[in-house]
Image 1 (spheres, rainbow, N blue to C red):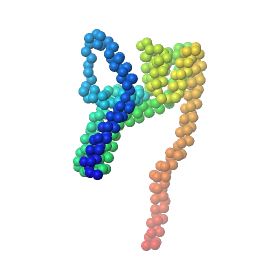
Image 2: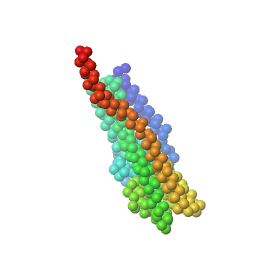
Image 3: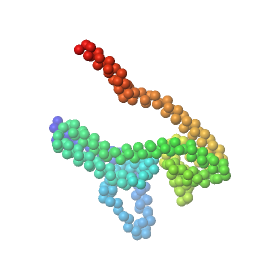
Image 4: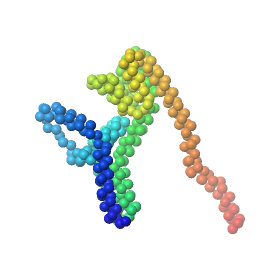
Amino acid sequence: MTVIAWLIIAAIILPLAYFAWSIASIDRKGIVAIQSNLGSGFAQGAGVSVQRPPFMLGLARKLTPGSYEAKLDQWLALAGRPQSMPLTKLIAIKPVLAVSGATAGLLLIVAGPSPLSIGFAIFLTALLYFIPDLLVYNTGLKRQEEIQLEFPNTLDQMLISVEAGLGFEAAMERASAYGTGPLAQELMRTLQDIQVGRPRTEAYGALAERSTVADVRSFVLAVIQADKYGIGIANVLRAQARQARVKRRQIAEEKAMKLPVKVLFPLLFSIFPVLFIVLLGPAVIKIMQAFS
């Protein structure tokens, strides 16, 4: 099959597949809710002109399905919403990278047309389109690991503050003020949500949604139940802190047990060959000299 035939097939199949994926994954209910909210907004009632987004951002939003945009927003929330990569910038930069990869792949195909170059062009386009997602997802994973490591110590600080006579929110404020990691930032954001008038249950639920750590989710659920049924918060904090310390110790023991297996492959492929060359090399050379 010639290169022109491959290009024609790709030009037909890829747009159809993307269109089908957009139709299948579009969030119709979310779009209807957004349109209704925008229709009843205060800007139109007050006669204020709404600033339109840039052309590239508007085009990128039209090409991006609603469910995929919601997934990107969730990954950004898990990553702490870095200021260098907001959602609008992420959506706008993905098509630019994809077009750059497609241009480089097209130049490669023109220089040497072959099935390998066509496959590499498609792979490069897809890689550059999804590489911002990979970076955001990796940042979110590292941030959640830091939250999991900080969680037991933060609970101990809050427990000490509560036993000293402070309230639960005051203990959260003190723990977030003296903390420097992502968990302290999440606690501070929860307190800010409560201060602006958001209900406590919703603020705590948002804290659980911004984290994938099971300990944080169970802690939020326990706090909500204690607030609902009037259970002493000190007992809840004490039980949660004990459970978090036990789980952290178990995770450390699990990693220690996995360490010999992880060291096995570097030993087999990196250390043992060099060791055999150093030990057996002179003997092999003398044997070769004796038989020659």
